[in-house]
Length: 249
Image (cartoon, rainbow, N blue to C red; front, side, top):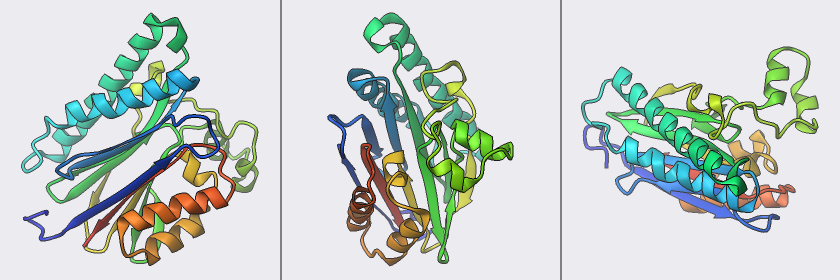
């Protein structure tokens, strides 16, 4: 319950292996509903699982230090960025000290609720979407080569869908640049707002129009998360699939 703003927050999530042998995705929901994370690991079975797990363990440890009632936007952004940098450093150190984990890394997206404002951002190509007044918006920017090519004007969105570099990332937790560039956004919450945090297993099988329809029509966040995962599965997603849905009422 957000007492100051008299709004209820409800959340639901689901993470499945999909067509992979193991699940390298990870998800975290703060017991007090203050922040949420989704991570998608890479670097082989043991490496991917380890990296995403470090992300959803290390980042919450830092986020818990935020003063969720009184922190200013500047203070909140600083603490979020420090939390991401902390996780990135832990993953890099472990990758350098253990040969079997040397190529591990992970994406991460998050939403952090402070004093009626939602701070969202991420590293990699997992995404955060918002649904407000019937309009779906992607709030995060993919740190992928195809996204960079589109921004440079050398690739169209249609060409990017099946491009051979669509899954190649230039920024992720576990690389030197991974501790910065979360592209934080502040979203003042309004009643009726809905948010989706997801790994690319969702977007690899469910189009934006499909996500819009499911987020808009759902009445329960848990069931909505389940229908989104099923839609991605039915749409041919070949990856682990994780969807976390937040409703504000």
